[in-house]
Length: 65
Image (cartoon, rainbow, N blue to C red; front, side):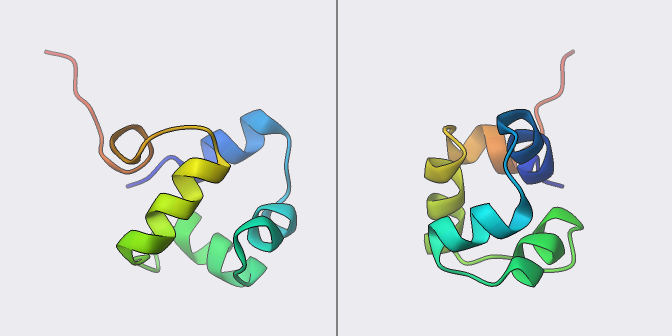
């Protein structure tokens, strides 16, 4: 599970705009958002930076006890 779509939509940017910003295909953004592609660490870092967050917040679910 990841929060890429949540962060992207909250920033009001399209999949295409995000893809262009970090140098990947729009389809790759779609696959990541739908948990059908596991991005490399380098790509995870680029996504987090582009979305103004950190890796933990973007890719790891936190549970409230």
